[in-house]
Length: 462
Image (cartoon, rainbow, N blue to C red; front, side):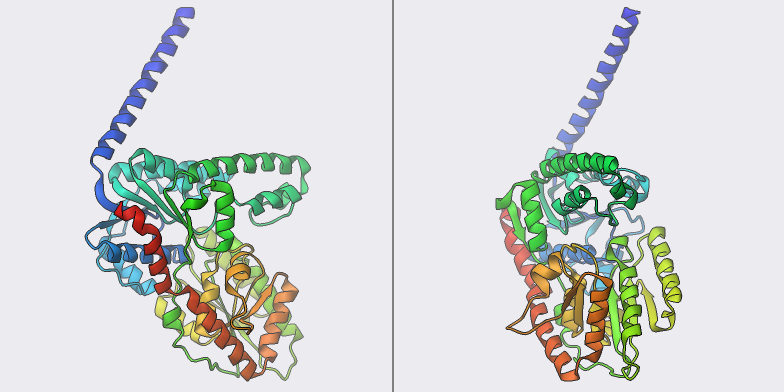
């Protein structure tokens, strides 16, 4: 029996040595054959959100900074081609690339999909991203690895393959606020009510989150350069990754120039409120609908009845189901005749919709930045944003002493803000909209290009 155990251990050891030797040889071979290129790790190139805009603007910035360097996009969208990616950048975001990027297709994207991990989703997706990055870097190894999707667990792998690691972090995978909510047993989209009600489950989740935050800090510290999109994100990343000298704040690219030409005058007979966001749970669309219905019930009958337009994209079946629930909620609240839904709209249609809105709604708690809020302001729509994180710290601030919008948290506060906008005299709304537009100029696409190039230049030129 002892000899059998020794044989099994010997075979297992031999197998592990063989696997380790194979993996080491793959890494060494890839390191020797690195290409003079920047590889953008962005598995979802058709999500339609602010992260995708950052991707295409970052590609354009690199092409302008070093014209002869190749830009590669690692994508899990199998129908993506260089031409279709360049066309999408133009059609969806108005970003004209100097030349189409090359596409490296990924076939293991399921390992980072939320549906793959019904439980322990956060660590499951993070560990899955390691497998996906291995596939990416084994297929094509660039000199510079640029993560634009927030997969920090891929950074040690990129370092193993000999890449300089650069990232643009929209929000931390785990934040100190998330840990604090679990400790306080507060229910939210990322802290189920059943867990919040249970002291034992909350303690277990607190241990899980604390352990994960330590791992997250370790892998994040592998970045040679970490760009973050707001003061809120910078504060959390500095505390978690502990590399303050390698962290730069670069506000995301917002289409302020194209929107600032829109006239401030809006149709007075039907005030339009717009909500631009992907149909994801954290965007809290139901809160907006509740507030809108409450505002209508409070309005003086002599005032014009408003309209609410939801504009967003659906990434998957879960998003489609959320959109349908929102439509059902509008029927239940008896405001379905006052609400419109616009799914997966093109860039030109989005501009037209923004040009007709008197105000824009945003209700995500701890929104890392809030590109949609800036777009409202640039378009001349008064923002009604959540009183936290990016909108509170960076965006909806006074401009030369003038108020630029409203901040709210509860349904009642949002309803109050909606009513105030409708009751506001036209000259006062123009004044607030003009101040908001001036404020939005600080977050322009051109400013993003300048700041990103300045941050990344030392890494690319080295």
